[in-house]
Amino acid sequence: MKPADLLVVGAGLVGLATAREHLLRHPGAQVVVVEQEAAVAAHQTGRNSGVVHGGIYYQPGSLKARLCVEGARDLYAYCEEHRLPHERCGKLIVALGEHERGRLDELERRGRANRVPGLRRVEGLGAIREIEPSATGIAALHAPNTGIVDYAAVARAVHAELLTLGADVRLATRVEGLAPHVAGAVVRTSAGDVVARRVVVCAGLWSDRLARAAGAPADPRIVPFRGAYLALRPEAVAARPVRGMVYPVPDPDLPFLGVHVTRHLASPGDGGRGAVLLGPTAMLVPARDAYRLTDPRSWRPRDAAETLAWPGTWHVARRFWRTGVHELRMAVDRRAFVAEAARYVPGLTVDDLEDGVWSAGVRAQAVGRDGALVDDFVLSRLGPVVFVRNAPSPAATSAFALARELLDRVG
Image (cartoon, rainbow, N blue to C red; front, side, top):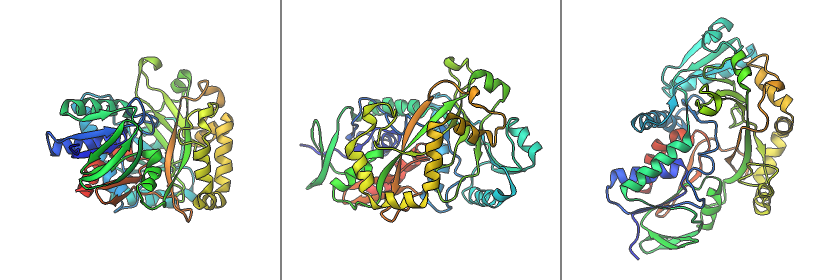
């Protein structure tokens, strides 16, 4: 069996971008992409708010800080080249009181250190409402380069491009293990073994499981958090227009950004205006694909057992139990959910909401044995295999830049 030059596990946007980057560097190379689902972008890539992040939040010098700014630039360029819908609608991060000024100052410091394009500080309610007429606050950061995009559409475009470049994309093919091989590594799949000189594992919610099966350390472990989004009715959007995105100042101890208000891309279903979303929540769930809690498949004994057996889960529970109670309340009580968003877009009520959940996704959050909520991207290498051990938001924004980083590491 002739070994492939590169095998990529996972057909989310990071995996697809990695395969594409390799073929751009090495035209004619034999590249295989293996994906357990029947379509690309089935999990985190296709189940998020569609935000193109600017790079404000991340510690200067971190992988997230560098790759987010680079990746956003590359993502916009790709969308323009392939005529994919996108918009630089801007983001406003608002401080509601004096107690949040220090955190806003720190975000501004990080954003400037990370060279976020166009970042500026605004002071006072009048200046805030010049940007977002429905928002409130005493000060804010405005990031005009932050935008919106359909990441699933981007992934489909990269998939189509890969096929024209000669890649072998194998959907509905589950990876069952990896092992060393004289030619590099052998990847055991539900459709047979594949030998490759180099392997990049971009398995998202299942990244730790494949890494452990290959002999990599158990730490960190993926702990799944479900995030749900609700949508505003068209008449509520007309009454309180949102031009871009309105975000709170986040809790520095948590990797989640809190409930925010985000305008989505326009579609015929919303009359061409663009849906306005509230969310997400951040609730620990008993399955790595718990998109609908009423679905029996959202309760997987193996996933729940692994989460509960991990010491880090209990450290997180003890440290953030109040946050957990708050998130659970928002997940089950729409009034509490809306009240959170109404703190910085006043006047929103539960009557402004569309029926049901607009969308839901599950975040693959890496948690250390000691309970550390891993914030940065984590990449590790085991011989000819590179594992993406932690790549939640802004991984989709960073995908093209992260692909370069992965290939540089795999050699």
